[in-house]
Length: 110
Image (cartoon, rainbow, N blue to C red; front, side, top):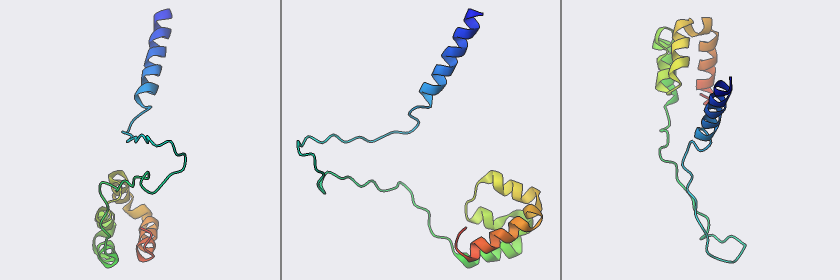
């Protein structure tokens, strides 16, 4: 009984400690004694990759010609794979999800 409790506690602690810092953090140390920030103290970090803008009318054409059976517009806009497969299996949410996608594409919210 004690070993099971001890192992459960160890596994729980390991899970929390392993998930605590899941991404690297870049820290900078300022050696100035001044408490106010100057423009040179602030470091701007650019994102590693940015998404290229997608053409709205290409998305509409893909929705119209290949959207219902293959979810081509969703693949074009790089939506999550699981949702794309669900879109295909449910035939666009019986058409409702497909119409919502078209409205979102046309209003640039997709």
